[in-house]
Length: 302
Image 1 (cartoon, rainbow, N blue to C red):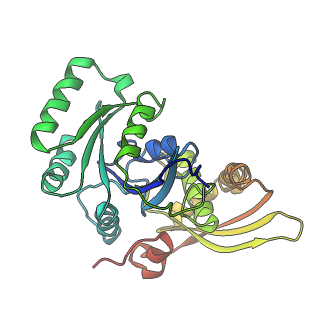
Image 2 (tube, rainbow, N blue to C red; image 1 turned 135 degrees about the vertical axis):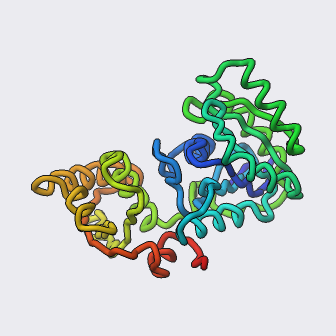
């Protein structure tokens, strides 16, 4: 556990932002290893995923929330509900903004909601390595005029530039108290859930625009074998037969590639041999299934 030379600190940091602002990348950077899946596609994160970051005597529980956006489906409403729940009672709310794309139409309602919240708010402008200085400073000035941010940081979540200073500042904001998790724990996600997230990430990476992002990965079986390896069975759920054909690929080539990539990454993360078995199921209205929502860690929202 932490060195007892001084008092321990522990607190919650909610990471909010428009879709694709880089929230999962930042959480992974703060933790020091992968705990949340990333994708070039917006709205990748669905449920609140906790990353647990340490700095000296301080443990920071990072709530990686889904991006806030205009909801259209039940799944969208559940994701937004999860995002705001992640901000409740946080010791700090970190608003991450893509300083290149900015996404003003999605930022405005978020700024309006944050303006009157009591939590300490931190503005973090991301992707500064790709932004020009003058517009960047103008953006920071504009946003701080709308919301009383306690501090502003300029970072690149991808390269890590500026992240150590921001991490140190966040650690200083956390209240004194015992750590909530063991020193070697980096996430509250079960290995079973993590395995489905890794497979879902490979779906996104390998199918790009071919498959709409209304797919899900369901855990079916997770068994530790006597030889020290783990056997994992998962179901990929899509809405139409045409999508099933895309996931399978010619002669099953695509699902084989997805499985091989997910298996290799899981073996590295879990530190053991992985036997991964995938199959595809067509379920037209899966996004209306309470059971699937619960498996994702989302609340059923009407």
